[in-house]
Length: 467
Image 1 (cartoon, rainbow, N blue to C red):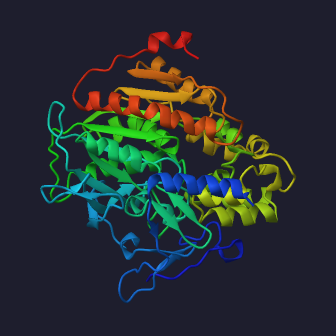
Image 2: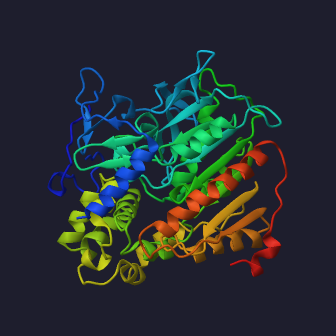
Image 3: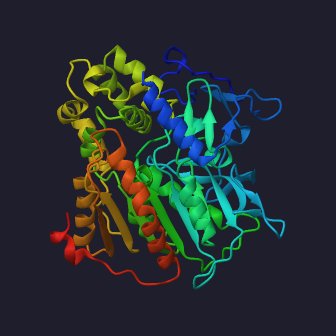
């Protein structure tokens, strides 16, 4: 049975590990969000959106989560199997001359995957059949796109952002910024499937933020699920590309590593991993005290859900402020986290005033958890393009570059791109976001070449010379 949860304030948010949960900064940060939204030409998701008839809707920070996102009690056995679908109206679309909508026809998905603990999990997402013809070689290809950081509240789900590029509720703001990449691939004639990741959108659990196995499986199973959508023009020979930046870059990188063993049936042609968080121990240092400091809460919340034994460690090492912050962030989107926790030092959350990095260093169990999340221990079978901004101080450049080195040493086909831009300001996200925008065109061109069957040219030989 669905239950209503309202979580517009810290006091109203449920416990960190509750299976079903919902929902200072300055006017300058809020204004920046408004500018981005205006540029997207977005429409807001109303808080009055309805769920299924006869059931109490789940509400996250004033935003009603559609009944579609409630997983059933039982799931199919096979990974990638569709659980349910429904039409998904795109928030930004136009009528086409032939009666089809531009840039395509979207379908909301729920499909089965396997989580990091080896259990079945329902994941949601969206498939878009493009109106444009594929001009490359071979049958129409598929891009499995992993969104960058959206948050941990269900109202932040990427599939919802395709319908409502701007979501506004009671203390929540979510912007579908990765819709730009989705639409660019559709314009090129490639079909696109977007994953909501494990627990983002679905109302039965928390989103397991930056969990490499959950993300990698969810992305690969989205590609599998797309093949079963009614009306798709995909064929068994359709090439598949993985695409993502930031959190999405980590998901794409993890999926590329896991594909040979987990999803050999996915005809993988290439993967783009932009600013991948490959070493979470280093990435957490960059996030700490930054504009995106709230992401620390998403990480802790997600890992505690995957491994409940961590709860005792977290309770012992956090103070009341930290515990409240973890509850608060569990229903936040990126906009909320920036407005509520930007530039917060983790020393404000710990019981003894030490940083989160020091806490991890002192706790063997936490060190083990992060070590298990390290990307780079496996070899991708398909070509990979890895891009990283040399001044990225959120998802650090050095650890991303090290991933390229690790893959090259294993004999992988790696195209490494160091994005050279001036330092645009410390810890305020600009050094992380600028490469996302400036590299996107090159990344999409590289991917469309792979989807056309063109061979990649690895530049592993140049790594000693690369920044």
